[in-house]
Length: 108
Image (cartoon, rainbow, N blue to C red; front, side):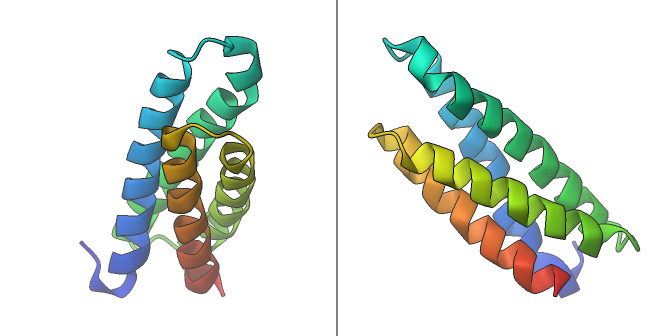
């Protein structure tokens, strides 16, 4: 793993896994309609986080630009998850906000 981006790569992978867990957990909630946007943003966030981590690991010239977008997606997902009271949503929001901050630093 690229030492240059280690912290951001780790945050991205943790965020992706946390979003996957949150989306799966949301599917088990009683009011599925209320969770629809949370599931949607979780899936998008997990995808962009994995892509950002992969590009950083390759030391791609596109990594900083993808991380800038990743920060925006993570912020949006975190805001959506924070709206819900479920424990999995709260933990996901925390992971998203951490990842957004790491990606902002990386892309600055």
